[in-house]
Length: 125
Image 1 (cartoon, rainbow, N blue to C red):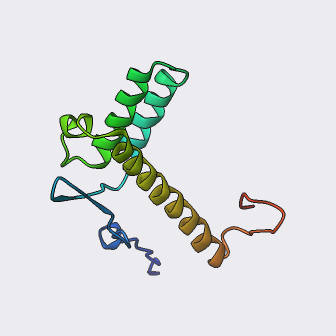
Image 2 (cartoon, one colour):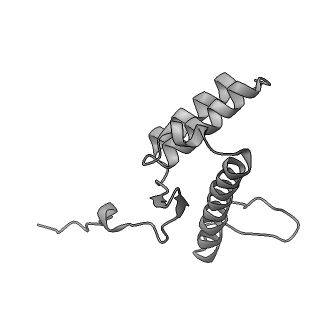
């Protein structure tokens, strides 16, 4: 009888390389890693509220997104923030997401999964 080759991926061993936190009102809050469920929710929200120019809707969406990213912060705490702090948190989370995407692309390029060229910004597969 021949033995089969088994390939194994231990997803439990894959942990985020970095932890991102913010400090608000004297407490540290860890940014939750985006799940598939979060992505689907955010995509639906963006589609439903996509062209909303109503400031209340836009701010409500921002707070909903942030509350999912930082579940230890109540929506009411976000609502009490000044716009400068709300914008700073949004900017921080956007940069984390961009750096994560850039890092993933860089790692894939180093592993030979994508090829980066100088004339194109998007990876070629």
